[in-house]
Amino acid sequence: MPLPALLPITPFTRPARGEVAVPGSKSLTNRALLLAALCPGAVELTGALASEDTEIMAAALRRLGFAVTADPAAARFQVEGAGGALPATEADIFVGLAGTAARFLTALCAAAPRGRFRLDGVPQMRKRPMRGLIDALRALGADVRCPEAEGFFPLEIHARGLSGGRVAIDARESSQMLSALLLAAPLAAAATTVELSAPVREPFVEMTVRLMGQFGANVTAQAGGYRVAPGRYALPGGRSAYAIEPDATSASYFLALPLVHGGKLRLRGLRQPRPGQASLQGDLRFTEVLERVGVALRNAGDGLEVAYETPAPRRGVTEDFSVFSDTFLTLAAIAPLLQGPTRISGIAHTRKQETDRVAGMARELIRLGQEVVESEDALEIHPRPLRAGQMVETYGDHRFAMSFAILGCHDLHGDGRPWLTVRDPACCAKTFPDFFDRLEAVRRASLA
Image (tube, rainbow, N blue to C red; front, side, top):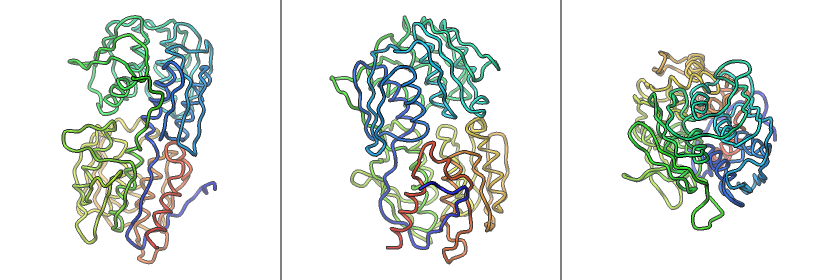
């Protein structure tokens, strides 16, 4: 059923309980789609995310001549790989507002031995930084043209392959640019040594490097950068299937939910890394923040259990979100319920994402009656009585919609009456199309 333009959030009146199945990781799905297309033969992706962003990637790969079949109900993609080649030599590619698709496909097209490819997106995509990637690709011999504004979409690529060799990249504005360069580097004529000319947020780059290794690439981290050997992608051992982990960022909303009205939830398929272990998803670091706020977390069976018992303290915290910034909105939205101020730093780069997330979050919290101190790189939120009857703007940004929906589950009036309305809840289609259905299922389970 389509979501209305304005969605009042029904509060929880009893502690949360039950189990939630979080969809597959968007970041892993989009990387795996591209890598599968570069493998020889068919690759099946299981547990994959079916959403606006992943369909944009799948549609773009089809435009490039790959056969990609989606089965959203089964959370699967079937990709017929072409062994490192691009079947099409000319294509117009639309990336919407999908940053991963925009950056990854730009590098992929530039690595093709020949062809002419045009890439564009929605107006907001034309404002998102691309210069660091474009400059690096040009340094490797690519012909990348910017018909309207240098360093931004739309782009026109006259492919002639990548030479390999030594190249520097400035990916401080988005680690996706570094990931894109690394993903394309095995297709170069010679080994590629990538030097970082500025610091970069590491978790998503580490995800890229580890995933490339799982698909047979030879990537070595070295001082100040990476070395990528030329070669072809292929799943080892003759395997033809790859399983996608549940999305840690999407999980953050349900991990925070028990803080609203107490209770216990189990997130199926998600695991908190044990000391010394590493996860493919850096956003699982958010679990450590929630533990400092006051929840208890433990791996239980094949899932992760989160619990909070009222009236235990819900503590405001000071956290640097620079390496897992997609989850900062989840904490910021529930900060009005915490005891003491919450300070969130390391988020300046999120001003150039789907929207200016720092300014937008400050604006909406102030609308809800909170005291907020905003700086270029941080927000400091001082809890004040929540103001009822407010409509939260989402700015077309899925993370605003989901974060404030969790706050709206707080029973402000004490009788279950909605007090917060989310504008444009359908923007969640970008990464979590049935988020509100799953949230309502948990609320109903709490009443049973």
